[in-house]
Image (cartoon, rainbow, N blue to C red; front, side):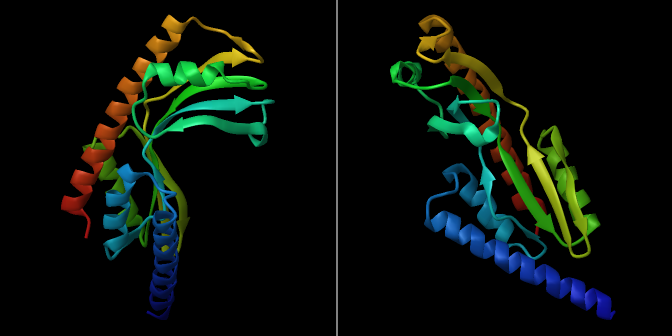
Length: 199
């Protein structure tokens, strides 16, 4: 009994810490607008928490080497983007490689028991999310990671040379827009189910 009390107290402490992190991220506009409603709802439940989430994005990522430490955002959009904006950004002076990427949503949800973690995975399946699993399993703290499957990654510029035609880049951007739209639909569906079934 004493062990359960300690585990419960530990969970409450972790939940409060993540709630504070979420509020700070919202105050500093560091969380995607599309994720605020979902994260706020989860944070307000008794047995679940989250401190952040990315709803998906279209980016131009600069790489000076193959190390992530050398990467930087040349441009970043958390919504659909006009192809002309991408083409204009590519005309700017850059170094190394520029990759056009569409990255899917990702969210980490914490809970206090294996049973609740399994419940999150069942809600994942109901909403049509394909990728997800338990990435942390400790007494009083289980973390479930959910990731979308819609993504694109294309090398479009090296040094000063744009490696694809304007027509090709427009086509890729439109495909990225289509995928990110589908990605947002998955997030909305998941939130709809979560609001009905999590307390």
